[in-house]
Amino acid sequence: MTVHCFLRGRSFFDHVLAHLGRVLHPALEALTVERIIVTRTPERRGSSISRLTISGLAVAAITGWGAYAYSVLSSTQLEQQVSGQTAALREYQAQFLSERRKAENEAGEIRKLQEQLALAKGEIEQLTVKHTETEASLSAAREQLASLQDIHAPPALDGAVALRGVTPLPTKQDVIAAQKALTDLGFGKLEADGVVGATTRQAIEEYQRLVGLTVTGQLHAQTLQSLMRSAKVVAAQNERTE
Image 1 (cartoon, rainbow, N blue to C red):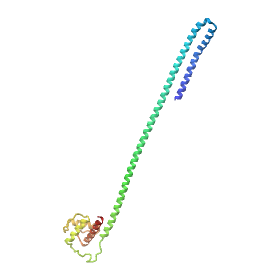
Image 2 (cartoon, rainbow, N blue to C red):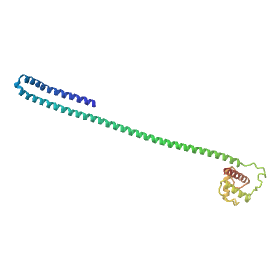
Image 3 (cartoon, helix red, strand yellow):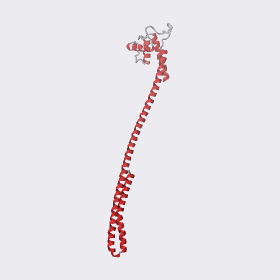
């Protein structure tokens, strides 16, 4: 656009100069003729000098107006060029700011995604640790359950040898020992009073159900022997842990 305006202004200035040339050409010719006449005829020298003066003033006036018009046109052309460059600069600045805002928004989105990814990785690591701990706990529970099943399996009774010291109706000492064993095994906080009450009977039923014995709630010989063995095993494990 600037080049186009410059070429258009230049052609206009050429047109003005050509017009000034056409206007000044007759005056210059007249000056030349007057000079010849003055040179050849001294008597006309005075009037010719006046004419030359007037013609010179006219030429000077025309030249001045032409210069003024040229300067005005040059100033206008310069203003147009500056205005065009300013508009182009503003457009470039607006485009640059728009691209910058777009880049900042995209960078913000990338940062958010990175933060979310870091949080997701942290959660996955926590879940992995919990899963590992759960698997270890389950494995330990399976092993403990297997050992308890082996311990609490109904023993092969060989007549009176297996039931030595156990009567069909347990003594008070047998009941006290059973109550202490049930408390140690976690079947409630039973009072070791030697009486098979409702709380003691309920604890015996839960124990029989857990180890696979016939659930009767009665402290028969098989249940008492199993309780004593379990209590000894738990006590030994606690001692090793301590």
